[in-house]
Length: 358
Image (cartoon, rainbow, N blue to C red; front, top):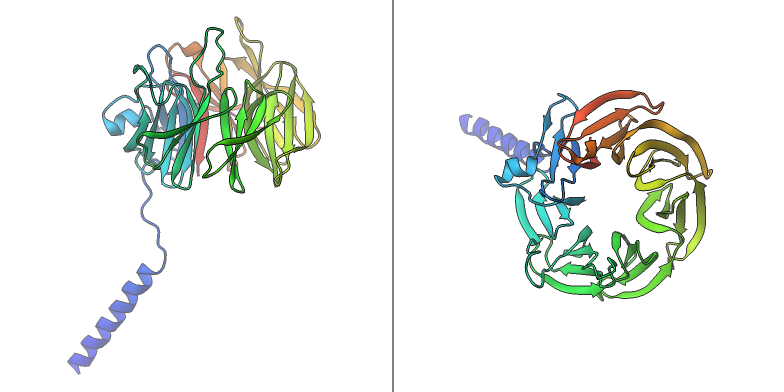
């Protein structure tokens, strides 16, 4: 009888263990997997860019989390923070890309970092994307005597954890951002005012599509793919045909002095920073409608030194990055959709963007 009871107990235990293993129960979350990540560009002269973390539940802010975790400064000017799978790719336009574990921000590898060499692998990287276990890095390339960038390129690394650049594929001047579609990469090139098309695996640009305005980045909204471009008095949303990449429709919104800083809201709406520029930097957050092509509110929120935008789909608030003239730390100002300030969050130097991890 005792043996039968023991056998029954072991059977029940084995079924319990099996059910737990097969339940897909998630591991405990890492320290930086939830909350708000604030991209701090840093000052070019001191190269003190890093990432801040804000805890939505406690209100705690941690500055310089890369340096805190890795016991060394990031030592760069951060242009972009790209998430892919288990990793973040920290793109510095001072010549390197650092790959970190998104759970704990531990560095796992890098690309570049040798900008002082005669032939650096990366020169002025702007963004990155990971496709087929390869990193594609958009790089302006060097300036010529006229401060143009005729030798821009896409650097290709044959491992998602970094290493040497295996190939540099020529692209149109000043590649800014990527979008993967079908078996191609679309590349927004700001100086050339083109969409370059690169076939994945072939890894060369096959054709370029001219667009109106200076390209900034690709956006997806309402099942449509757009390229956001701008000039001094207009923002353009070019709808891209997903089969042949031609421009099927363009929405033009007339608004004075728009910058490249834009974030999508809800219901076909977006927010864009406008600025008078130097020396006053009288800035505003404007609310616009991609759907109607109208300006809803040209001055939803006004101030100085606006340098980045984000929209939190959880609490429906807009986050405005203020750079404080790059004189010390900046501030993230949280406003509601009526333009009323809700709270402020201290940041690092030159806050420029937000990633929400709810």
